[in-house]
Each structure stands twice: as C-alpha cells, then as structure tokens.
Amino acid sequence: MNSKNEWNQLKKVVVGIANQAKVPEIDMSARTINYADKSDVSDIIVGNYPTKVIEEANEDLETFASFLKSQNIEIVRPEKNNPKYYNYCPRDSVFIHGNVTIATPMPIKARKCEWKSFEKHLNNPISIECSYNDNLYNLNCLGSKDTLALTEYSHAFDAANVIRANDDVLYLVSNTGNKKGAQLLQELLEDKVKVHTLEGVYSYIHIDSTIAFLKEGLMLLNPERIKDKNILPKPFCDWDAIYCPEPVDIGYYDNYNNASKWINMNLFSINENLVVLEKHQENLRKELEKYNIECAMLPMRHQRTLGGGFHCVTLDLERV
Image (tube, rainbow, N blue to C red; front, side, top):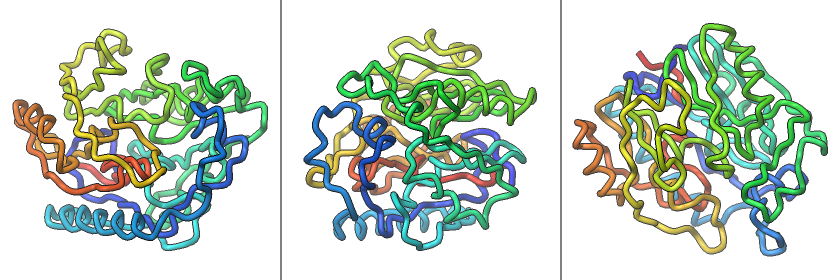
C-alpha cells in the first residue's frame, strides 16, 4: 500500500456503497457537528434514506467503478453490513500516507466503526479512539457558524480534513477536526511529513470542497472560502491556483440537504492529467482543460443528499 499525494497514477482504490445509509440518532456529537447551523432540529428525518436515493446512488457508484476498471484500476468495496451512519464515504474514516494507515478518531460517534467495513483491504491500520466525552463538544456553536463544534478537550478528526502533497499535508481545523487532532497526526507521521493547519476559513466540515490538489504546484480553490491563496500556509501559498467557477447546483432530494453547492468541485484524480468530475460542471471542465487536465464527466446525483462527491466516496490505496 502506497499513496502519498492526491494526483499520482491511481492503481487501487476503495469505492463506497450506499446500502442502508441512514441519518443517525441526534446525540451530542451529531447535534453539534452536523447541525450546528440549526436552532431547531425537529424537522430532521432520522433513519434510513429513501429507497430511491439508495438505488440511484448505487447506480452512479457502479458507473464510476466501471469507469475506473476501464482505466485498469483495481476496485475494492466495503462490506454490505448495517452501518449506524453509512459506508458511502470511505475517505472520511481512514488516512493513508505511504506505509502509515490511520483509522482516525472521528468525532461523530455513529461513524466510529465505518472503517471496519473495508478493514481487510488495509495494511496494519492504527486505530485511534475518540473520547466522545461531552466536554469535547461546544454547544456555543449552535446557530453560530464561526464557533467550532469541537473544543480542545481531546483529539478528534476525520481523515477527510486532510489532503496530501508528499512531504506536506494540509489539515483543516473545522467542526470535524480540532488542533489536538492535527498534533496527533503530526506525532503519528513523525518528522517525515509536515502537517500544516488551516484555520478560520470553513467550519462545515471537510477540506475537499474547499481545496483540491491537482498536481505538484497546482491546486483548485473555492473562491467563497479562499479569497486569497496567501492565507494558506507555506508551501501551498506559493502554488498556482485555479479558482473554481460557480458550480452548477444539481440540488438534493426532498429535505435531505447534507452538503453545499460546492460539493460539485469535489473531483477525484486518476492521475495528474485526468480527473473525474460531476457531469454538469462544464465551466469547471473548461478551466481544467486549460491546464491540460482532462475530465471524465460522470453522474453523481445525490452528492448533496448524501454529502459526498467523487473524492469523498473513494479512498486511494495505491498510487505510483
């Protein structure tokens, strides 16, 4: 297993499944992290997603997996079990850098065992527990978008708070990753890799609808959140930047709104010259082609509904 960045040639990848995806019971962790912007959660529908959403999401995942196979990429899938949340986004629960594999201390309690659905495909994962102590969650975040859901009581972070660029990784401090989580990640990676933190730009939730690394020295930025690349830590503020054009909003199903329109910039790199992009994002495709990056335009109808685009629903195990 070897994957140190977001753009080298992909050889093996986990692709998620939507089977039995559900909205979990709203405990302290889900209340503060997923619904910090809501003063009233009485309209949240807890339980399984509608059958139509599951079936269509799985159809799109199969289309995606078939495309990857056509590129001679090995595909593995999570086991079909009965998750407390879902097995749709393997990116969220496991961080891989070279020979280091970490099942991260996910702060939403219902998600703590997601990685086990594809554990057999991982190389000696280090499992780090989250405390789930009430003191980890900041009730002052409710209705206050600039107040983070997590305190520094104990370490907590989702793997999707981090993107990789070989010897440097970028870690978003947000509702799903505190500074103690970044410190822990640095300890686990030792001095071989530098963990750079990004703060104060976006609290809901992961980094991959805000920044995408396309190749060494080139990144895609969300212009609503990163208005000036100089706010990024070095070395990333010295990279060339493509500012993502206004995304085409493909909407969400019924009342299940679990991601902003910017999930449509959530692309996945096959290599530095080919990415997979949601099929309606023609303006972004044209921008990427200016940099000799081709786009495979594929459907992902429930990106906003389920809260995950092509980068979210994958976990690259091997890149060369």
